[in-house]
Length: 119
Ligand SMILES: [Zn+2]
Image (cartoon, rainbow, N blue to C red):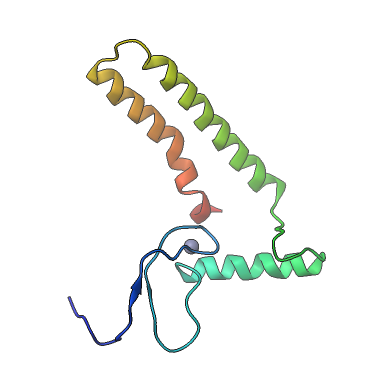
């Protein structure tokens, strides 16, 4: 793996301004990266354009009702799964209880994990 050509220090703690995903930044010429990928930068740019159009501040954001509803639905599913698993794992759960619990939680959590990419 090639090293040393850019001469930069990695900053693994940087988080994307749009999706909050951690990513590695190499210092170098130009402005430091704020986004993990181009599509995030584009989304942020578009959101800020819309904010400017309706006179919102930099900390406020416009999103569609459908996007918000979708997010709420997925959060609701996750919340219900957490409650199920809490209930299922009280007492003396077996190994397979744990396995089912993890699968159940993952099923509920995966749509949220992909949320910012599908958007
Ligand atoms: Zn991102």
